[in-house]
Every structure is written in structure tokens, then in C-alpha cells.
Image: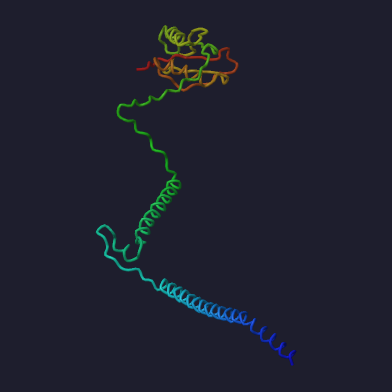
Length: 240
């Protein structure tokens, strides 16, 4: 019996000694419960905040699509069209562009018309006080006048005319081989006869020298058998 009493006392002591850990466990459970409630409240608040954000975003997007700019009174220097349209009037850009395009097309048309019509460059008009250029005369072809000697014959019937012509041609630079009388004195105009080998430029200068004093007839050909290259038959008609 004594043994049973002793054993009961030990059990009671053990039970009594474990009372403090039970209280601690209860406190931990209560703290865990409070923490769980705080977490639940935080989750609910988070969901509410998310819903508010989504709602605000939807209202912002919808408001931006339906936004109408407020009207305002135009300033004295501002066109009314810019106030209504929120920017410059398109006609301000279109009208000058049409004029520029028309000017460009017109320039191309007149340019092509000038080319087709063979437009020539205008003659420049000399300005006041500016000297007008004097045209330069083309000189005669330089020919050796002594290369083709001239034989002079008097056909006018006037004595001494062959000598007069000799002096005239010698002064002009021609070479004279001699003077004499023609087969006839019936020549009223002075005649120049030359072989085909004599160049035309030589005959031109010879005619220019004689025409100062005598009336010339048409040039004639000289036979190839003649001893002379050039022959002048003096006529009776003098140049005025």
C-alpha cells in the first residue's frame, strides 16, 4: 500500500510540474491565431487596393478616349480657324502650294516653247558711256604682186596712156614687164587678160588698182601660148 501511495505522489508531481509548458503553448496558439487574422486582413486590403487600381485605370482610359478639348476665346491676333481645329488652317498651306506648282509648270512650258521655236539670244545693247566695238575689216589675202608680171598695151588711141598705167601699177606694188600699143585703138573700157594659172586674188587686187582711174570691162582669158602671164589693154573711158 505504501508503494501505491508513493507512485501516485510522483504522478501528481509530474502533472503539476508540466503546467507551465501548457500555458506557453496556449499563448503561442493565441499569437498564431492573431497573426493569422492580421494576414487575412492584409490580404483583404490588398484585394481592395487592386480593385481600386483597376477601376481607376479603366476610368482614365475611357476618359482619354472621350476627351473633348475645351473651347476658348480667340485672341485678337489668332485666326479663328486655329482655335476651332486646334492647329493651323490647311488652306494656308494648300493655296501657296498651288501657286508655286502653277509657276513651276508655266516656267517649264515657256522653256520648252522657246526651245521648239528656236529662240535666239538677244543682241546686247551697249550701255550709256560704253564704247561700241568697231568691226574689224577682213584683210585681203597676202599675195606677192610681183610674182605675175603685167604687160601694158594702149588700146585707147590716146598717146601716153600705157606709161600712165605703168606708173599706177608700179606704185601699187605690181611688176610691169613692158608697155606698147594694142592691135586696135577701139577699146573704150580697160580689159584685163590672164592665164588660168593666175589666182583670182591677184586679179581682184589688180582690178581694184585700175578701177580708181579707168572703167573696167569683164576679165578675159589669155592664151596659154602667150609669152605674158597677165596683160592689160588700156581703154579710153576714165573713171569719174
